[in-house]
Image (cartoon, rainbow, N blue to C red):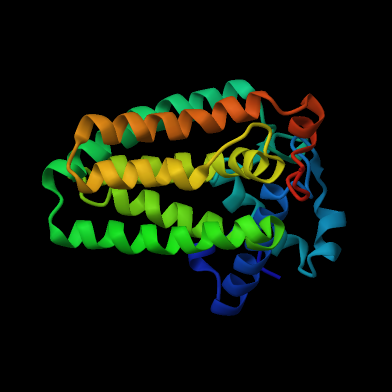
Amino acid sequence: MPDSSVSNATLPASSKTLVASAYHHLRRDIIEGRLAPGSKLRVEHLKDSYGVGAGTLREALALLVSDALVVAQDQRGFHVKPISMADFRDITQTRVLLECEALRQSIEYGDELWESRVVAAFHLLDRAEAKMAENRAFSFDEWEARNKEFHQALISGSQSNWVGHFLGILYQQAERYRRLTVTHQPIPRDLHAEHQAIFDAALARDTQRACEALALHIQTTYRALEQLPDQVLLNGQAGAAQA
């Protein structure tokens, strides 16, 4: 078993594979609420559930600490990071600030290659949204991937690598919240129409309209989360969509 004090970069290839597998399984279970926000992550119990040794599991948990999905507390072990409206409000406000600026830069500097990336990403997102409308539970993961690709394409013409880096972190932090709003549908919402408005304005090089549509789109997810029962937020359960 790899020692938990060894960095992932220095682990043998086979150990890296085990750590990566444990990391992805743990991350999935946190995002989907199977490991509830605030819950204690007991290495001695989880190592059997995930079929890895204690050292491997600690390495995976350390990666999730870096992702800010797990909190490491001295003498108290690991816990799933809690979720809260205050946290999501901070994520939302910062994301609007940075993503709108990145979109402005992309519209100003983006060339035909940028346009082609946006068109291709929107096409794939459109197809995923059609699938999700037919079977929401089955198609959410595909939609989430396509949604991420579309937002990345929109800002891919930005001149700032740092803005893109920080937006990647914010997008990842928002995933637990976004999944709750999409699967539980607390307010009537046409995600396709929201994305279409952003897409049309961006390709028309209408910076003001594109940024207004993008900001509204991001903020609507926050407003949707406000309507969810407290128990849903406490448990982080995103598995079953409500009618």
